Amino acid sequence: MHGYLKGKKILIGVSGGIAAYKVCEIIRDLTKSGARCRVVMTSAATKFITPLTLETLSEAPVLCELFPETSRSDVIHIEAARWPDMILLCPATANLIGKIAHGIADNLLTCICMATQAPILFCPAMNTQMYLNPIVQDNLKKLRQFNYRFIEPATGNLACHETGIGRLAEKEDILKSMVQVLYASNKLKGIKILVTAGRTEENLDPVRFLTNRSSGKMGFALAEVAALHGAEVTLISGPNNLKPPPGIKQIRINSAAEMAVQVFQIAAAQQIIIMAAAVADFRPKIISPTKIKKKTNLLKIEFEQTVDILATLGQRKGNQLLVGFALETDNQQKNAIQKLKEKHLDLIVLNDPQIAGAGFDTDTNQVTLIDKNENILEISLTSKFEVAQKIFDKIIEMSNSSRDLTPEIG
Ligand code: CTP
Image (cartoon, rainbow, N blue to C red; front, top):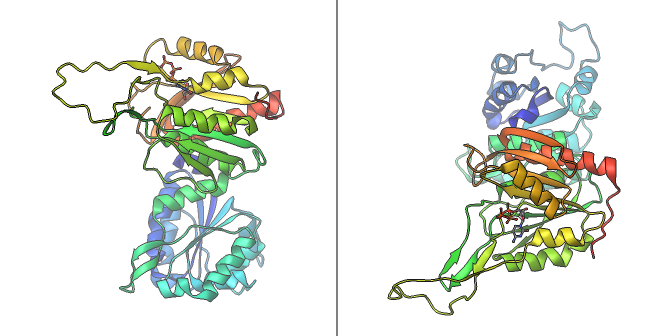
């Protein structure tokens, strides 16, 4: 994910709360990821950490004063407001939130926030009662209506020896939200997208089932990126313990048959369908109604094929854009191209689970994209979030060049 911060211009506004010390690590990670950082501190923030610390970490002069004695520019806030790709307010105190919500611009940071066109991400951090104060909540609500972005504070032990909501969100969550803010677009606005994710479980008896190692992470990342681009996303997923991405509709299923029912029910209304799920190809022909006892010396299980959901969608599709996955351990490209053609796909994502860091239950992946004209695009090992971004770059390029996406399934 950090690759997506490379070259991005980030203005970090630091206000005066104890969580200010945590911004040091965030700035260090941002510069390590290749982002260009500039820090603006309120005078209260300088009571908690020094400008020198943040100057060293951000590798740029820290701005504090609206009218610095040494500056010859009287429009320092305008210049700073025009510069960034986004502004991160971290930590954002109740005071800073209140000022921005009421259009007060009485210091450099609030002036920049008022003058900028860049998206602003607030990271509130404060005492629980301050956070829950109806005035603060009202200010947050007001700012949300004006499209300011927020990352909710976490719940836990606070510096004031209380336990509750108000801790600064975790660093990784902040960095992830920054990527979301930087990459959010309307490129798929109004487009209905169905993504399937994860494994299925095929019952053998009341206590046993057959499944596979799929975690669902790749499908969840795809759903998340689709929602970032403004799509109306439905995610149909097998058993997993992942947090659903914000702003999507999630339908949970267990078996391949249940997934088929849910997919076929809504497929006709979708413009893009991505089958990232690792659907079982076989299921036990008979599910024993009682637990199979071990006195059965030799257990023979008869299997029958499940319905191939993707192949069925391929047979029915009109102008829909259909994306499949292929998990191959040998003759990979040849097998993937065969699946692409047999299932009438527009794009296939080829996975090799034998590569370290790729495939099942990892946070990273390395894939090859093959489109229906057999154009090949290799995506080297990177986070599943980035892989999902690149898959959508390709999908958006394909849908722009070849069709308007009208649902047309029989
Ligand atoms: N798929 C599906 N329904 C199934 C099995 C697979 O929709 N019953 C979809 C998967 O979601 C994936 C694609 O088909 O997008 C390819 O899955 P994969 O397991 O790689 O291939 P199979 O077609 O099942 O063939 P094989 O297992 O023989 O390689």
